[in-house]
Image (cartoon, rainbow over all chains, first blue to last red; front, side, top):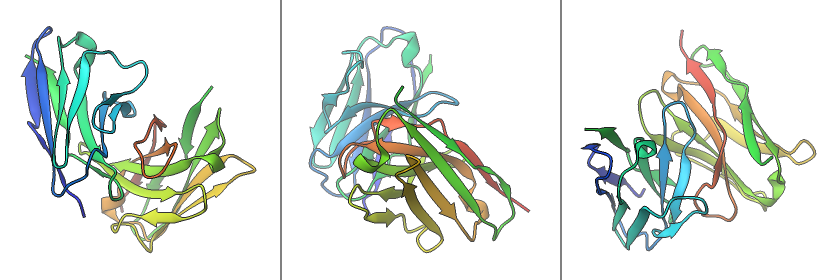
Length: 106
Length: 118
């Protein structure tokens, strides 16, 4: 099974900050990686797929990069609506999620 | 409107059974890859099962042999039959869509709560 490890688990930031979340796969997954945003009591929302492809309607301040085993999600100029939990997911072999990164207000 | 609406959750004793439903609107369930994903209280997301367009089904090891995924094309609905439930199956169960398989999940339902407790 492919394991996904996110870091950090919690991230404290201020509006306007640039934040980066890292996701590592236990084996190469090429570019088969997605990023989701989840707010309390809500379903996850797909932000990025194929490591760097932004979903329609997702603000351009979100970006993804990486391939193989190392991936990053970057949020440029953090906005109030961005405080949430973010998950990475591999879909190279079945589907596995990272444990999540909570972005909280500093 | 394109949406997924889950139902069927509830409180059940260990060893019991439940059947979850996911009503699909705005698109055809048979033309998409449909999954169940669960989220235990305060924890992350775990993929549970998927139904491919061609009829193939796959399961996470944690539920294999106990859960069965199915769909009713006439009702445009996805199901998850859960048998031999365990305390560790307690979670919010979401259905989710991917337009090809394997792929990311581009549409999610709000979920239905399953609690397994004596």
